[in-house]
Length: 577
Image 1 (tube, rainbow, N blue to C red):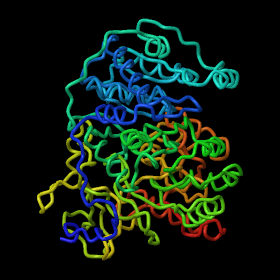
Image 2 (cartoon, rainbow, N blue to C red):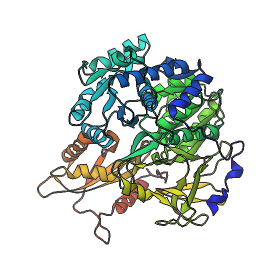
Image 3 (spheres, rainbow, N blue to C red):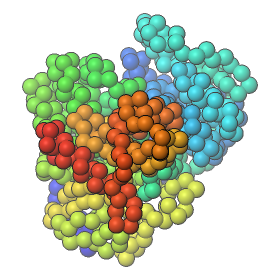
Image 4 (cartoon, helix red, strand yellow):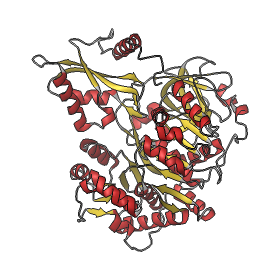
């Protein structure tokens, strides 16, 4: 077998072919890091810093508070936070207790929050004060027993705390402690409780639930174990040669996303690095934080494009950068070349390289080696991971250069979809080699040296600003509007977002098309969908194109849009994979 021969091994350089992963929990890896680097900075949040010793104390205090409030081993807790201290402290505290963290976007709508709370069966939740009203309404319709409320200023230095309060904090809803509501600052930061014992959860038990659309485009809870996270963090570290001198990461990706949680936070912290926490991506904020001299910037193409256009970044000292990787979307060559040009001019030598991953395997599971570049390639598998191309709809391995489905095997692959055995069985399949392989639903090729190339997605999915958008979800929301007879949603190539969401609508008899109806339908989507899932534009049709079997031919609409943009000079072929 091609994959079993690992033709890519000669390109590993100094990277080991196999890595011995500790059989432990994420909390236990932090204990090891704290023992080895007690006085090194673990995280930096807008100039508020905590050493590894202090971070471990914060985690233990949070675990004590949660236990005192009634959380038990095996419970699920929803964390709906930006990339900030409460979010990561709570994540590792749950891991210590043997509980499960369900990570969701803090900007989720009321109906989405209710869905996530129900599907995860969360007893506890953590969110921010500015989202309290929305979260509380959703929580009141579920079995949630305790809601913790944190504020951004809880961990800001005094001056920044005052400035934040004046700009945004004073507009947040007033939250008072009640039977089912606790303030993070009072309950966790100031509370004193008996020391909570460690849970008994082992490395192979579920530690977190992240969310993706699975193969059908409907939300699925992805069950990830301690071993998934630990192995993925170790592989990332080995891949870039991370050590105590080059281990600091600019964490601009959100912690509800496998990329942000698995690489920008967990991989850095378990290896003694500093995670520079960025609560939201603003190019100016990111450019300012370059002064903290991160060694790595990990992001999506839109992030690097925004940095390319930012004046502060163009003037920053970039000699600190050791490696930069882009994932989640296809990286346009123009973005890569412009970024590398700026880095060279500003004193650095790093290249911007592509990688590939998916939440069903935590996040990144292959990338280009630091010293290698191949046009259009997403690289070679990390140590301990295997990848291959199989013929579509089969477990038969494809020939070199033949298009087929990308399949991966290794320690980062998920346990399965939460309470979805049929959906799990559809993507985790035993192959003739006796191994269980994850069928990604992505189409690609492999060359004779074992380098992989991403071609397209077999399942319907839009990548907008690095985030997954599932057309069936958006269409289902549009169909709820009384004026909509038919709806089809596609991704349109976009220079900034890589893809933007566009809807094609057939209205019911008597309904009038036009700008007012377009605004009404977009507002209708925004009631229940997160903002990047909502259409940016709507086009009205009398009749949508059909396939031979009568289905709406979304591919025809995609091709028409590409042709229209190409004719207008707005599309050159750099479309997201």
